[in-house]
Amino acid sequence: MPQLSGSGEPLRVHDSASGTVRTVQPQSPARLYVCGITPYDATHLGHAATYLTFDLLQRVWLDGHLDVVYVQNVTDVDEPLLERAARDGVHWEDLAAREIDLFRQDMEALRILAPAHYVGAVEGIPEDVDSIRSLLANGAAYRIPVSAAEGAVQAQAQDVYLDLSGQPTFGEVSHLSRAQMLEVFGERGGDPDRQGKRDALDPLLWRAAREDEPSWPGESLGAGRPGWHIECSTIALTYLGMRFDVQGGGTDLIFPHHEMSAVQATALTGEQPFARAYVHQAMVGYQGEKMSKSKGNLVLVSALLRDGVDPMVIRLALLAHHYRTPWEWTDQDLVAAAQRWSAWLVAASQADETEEVSDLETRTVQQIRARLADDLDAPGAVAAVDAWAAAATAGLPVSRAVPSAVDALLGLDLLS
Ligand code: 5CA
Ligand code: ZN
Image 1: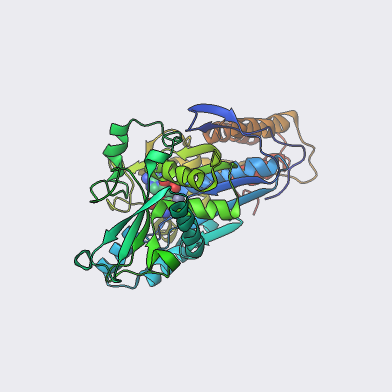
Image 2: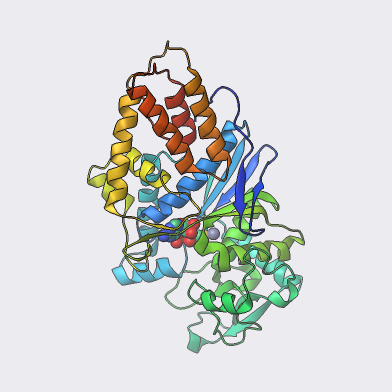
């Protein structure tokens, strides 16, 4: 990211745990963890909106002269991936590798800055095993036997669950009622009906090896694989430690995923909070429903690129929506973004390196910074650039100041 002169304002963002817009003013390095994809289908615009939001957040921090340690996981082993691979008759590892590759290409095309650490869940299994063994040792977790009739591969196989009754901080991320939790737990990867659980909501930590499922050595846990939430707890703790600055993802992850990741980390370390702020991207819909791989109502970034859509137009279409407002993608989003992008390009084409920076340009750069610092108000920042482009087209002398700020802060390349 090009460094602009001066410095941006401290970032204020909405924290789902406190329900308020707060100043997150990290020490350098700022620490960010964003939940990555489950790689069984290509990047859709909902994913792109999520990673773009945290890209803006990282850019605001960098503009404030902070170093940033950004960690993103990839859930390269989990139920939905295994189910899709089985359905399509491909090996789950091949499916994951292909989709991860495509995701990275899509992110690069959209000029989303790469995380410092991109960590696979599979890579993290040895640390998961250590974590789960200590949770069992300190009495925070319990085992449920799995019989051969249930598909167990090894004799005396046991699944492991976290005992939520021993966790007073449970609920502090989502603040949902128990009834609300039960309503979504099953739909979002949970297993409320599993026999033998002490509480329907207790999250799975370790799934003992079953027939036709991949498994890894678990030392005293026996062969198996980690549950979804412990993967993210462990990767975040390994790379960032407790009390990192921002945990990010879509609002669909508030419960159970971020709630469980946090409570597990607290159970493990005895410390809290897991993250100082939890920031969530509202859901992007399509054809009346949340855009989702399981429903199949997808607009893929790669498909738009293949159709010849300029990736900067896709990026601009997403920037026109505030991250906290749910919205539905329509073709009109692309049409409007393409018009706006042309207008900005016309303005930028007049940019002259030797031109002095006008007051209006200085103000525009300040506005972009101020809008983003105020809860990542991308539409507000876009409106400031619109006003500059209109003035430029009407004859204002154009320096490189605004295009440089658009590049650094909004990630759009107007000059090449
Ligand atoms: N691998 C897990 C997180 S550890 C996962 O949720 N993967 S995912 O592929 O389903 O989603 C990747 C990211 O995109 C998550 O942060 C999720 O919250 C976000 N996301 C998924 N669908 C949408 C959508 N329709 N709108 C906005 N964000 C979305
Ligand atoms: Zn996650």
